[in-house]
Image (tube, rainbow, N blue to C red; front, top):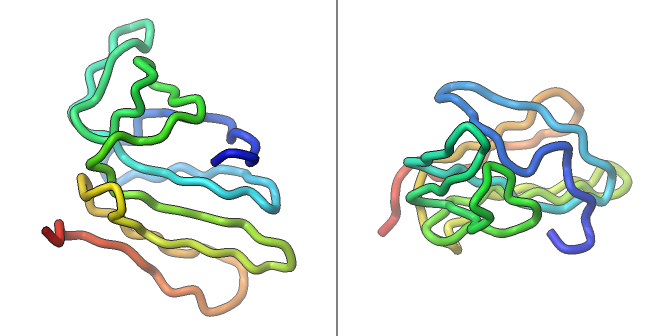
Length: 117
């Protein structure tokens, strides 16, 4: 999101049933989304059928997703007050569940595994 520093990667392949960890500074706010039916060549140029960011590359470099795209949104606040949600404001293209791992507090999982339309 505007005003938040970029993470170490802004685009990558994530195989089915896998995960990836990131380090983000306090105050960071941003979105993650999955892309489908992607076709990238050896130099990283290409596009995706859903969730494409229009960069023509694997890395999105701050560009947002084209609908439809299921969004996982995060805000890492000060004083341990972090917020997260799954949004269908840009449509639905993949099932997404967000589950807290570690830390303290009672953080519920959230997500959407079915197209609501």
